[in-house]
Image 1: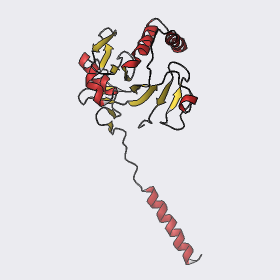
Image 2 (image 1 turned 180 degrees about the horizontal axis):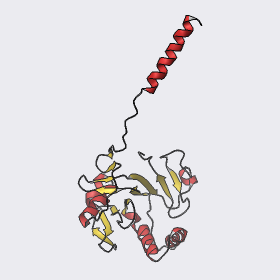
Image 3 (image 1 turned 180 degrees about the vertical axis):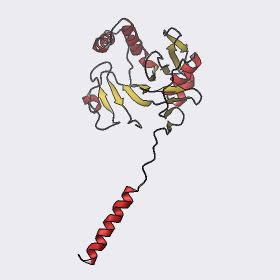
Image 4 (image 1 turned 60 degrees about the horizontal axis):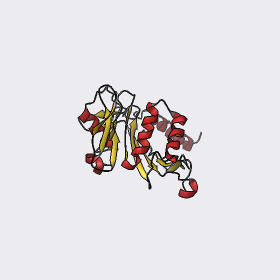
Length: 225
């Protein structure tokens, strides 16, 4: 064997030994990562069982709204029996709904007041036992009959949700939740908006339920996980 071949063999052997001794990547399973310094964080801490007070429900619910609207937003939530109630009257255009603690995960929403007739009709129909497609069709009929008035222009709904989400009371943050946004444009179509009927890529806007009263632009930013 030529000397150059011995040198080459020695080089590959040394490289193999070094790769075997390479330290393992640090485990970051328990690392806490802040997504939004004012409202949202992600962590692997076990989800606590919570029984939020009225004030805590309000504090958590308004985190779903744009920061500058939180102080004056109207807030719905739940009493000790799980009944849907008004927790606080508002002074601006935003309405928030606190998380229903009787359901798994966390979900708080906020929306423009012009969407309230549409949202209220959905709650009424749900209380009457309707769900899924039946609820959608009944609410659509309510709009077309003139019973429910839709916004004349676009109006936005904000959703802060996570299957393992919870409210960090001490730090005033929602943990393990992500935002998504819904911009209602009643009866909009692909032709009238130029939007795709499905996302072109993660986080891209697209038009859902085109041609209906509930037509809306859906925007779901990619989550951190």
